[in-house]
Image (cartoon, rainbow, N blue to C red; front, top):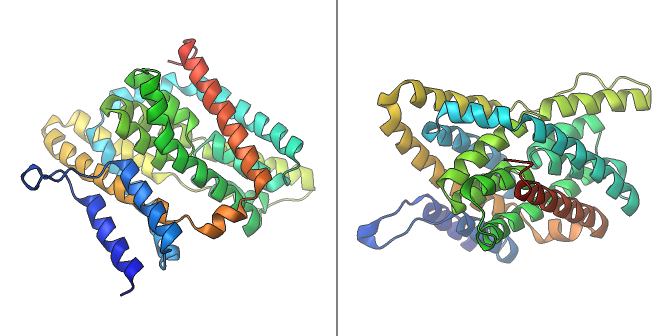
Length: 322
């Protein structure tokens, strides 16, 4: 067993350990898992990168399902309905701004679209769903994923700091995180650092937003077909099954109150597995991916992220989003 493999196993175990007051052990917060993963990836390297990248989205999905066991379905429904309008406007504006920035910076069409879609909806999941529709090659996809990943890692650490500095209420922070951070994992991670109410709002809002993968993917597929004057074949979007699992778990504890204690236990385990998810997410970074991003796609991603994050925060302060 190599040194890096042994360290990965040890740190992964630390991510899963809950609070143990008798041993004076405090369970790792989400940001610690991410930093540990990034640290190992950029120093010793990850000899199991292919496996961890394949396992990470599955673990994230089950973690999200488990978090639903501590949610009230009525709250989830209210947040989803209330967020329909500003979600539609936000996605439309983000895609438009991304297109303009891509043109201005002379970023290739597919890379620009993938960065824009990843920012508009839910990061890597949206990029993975849209890439086949655009006939994007591996370089385009990897550039977009690397850009989104680097910004996700930054957001997980920066957003709670800004939220506390601005004294954002829990609800406001949850909305901001869900609308301005790319991947579900970082949204949930940042919100869990901020507070329990922020976690509830952020998770439900982000999952409602993730449903837009399907119509956006279908729309882009039709656009590409007409633009290239040929049929692209059946459009295959990733099925966000974890959203249904999240809703099913919330429904069980809402309508069967006797399951609430079990639901809280499941949600607690899900929070620990989320820390492990972020650790694995950090392990997915590499020196090569950092250098491969290149200045233009990364600059597009940063500018678009700043515009979306700043605009969303301003709209929350003005009361347009609540």
